Amino acid sequence: MYAVIKTGGKQYKVASNDVIKIEKIAGEAGSEVIFNEVLAMDDTIGTPLVAGASVKGTIVKQAKDAKVIVFKKKRRQNYRRKNGHRQNITIVKITDLCK
Image 1 (cartoon, rainbow, N blue to C red):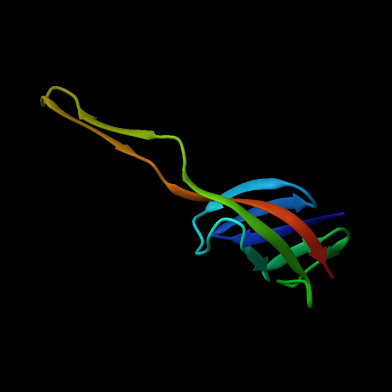
Image 2: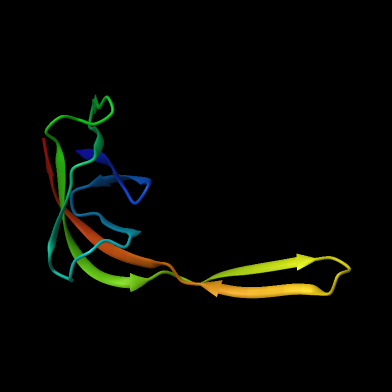
């Protein structure tokens, strides 16, 4: 059994006991979160959401993702800028798919 959920402007295909990295959501490690925006569940595809469906998960930890290097350059102009960015993420373990 699987579900497609939407959170943080992105879509994730999840099943029970999956561990996913999503954009940061509020909550402490160990607290439960519920995703109500379920786009599909098994053979049922929502229009746009599946009515009455939800996905429950537990926050494993709040962390930062790997560093992304942003490098800008204009040739022959002696213009170079280097910058780094680390996105805040939340690691969630999916516990239950409810229909």
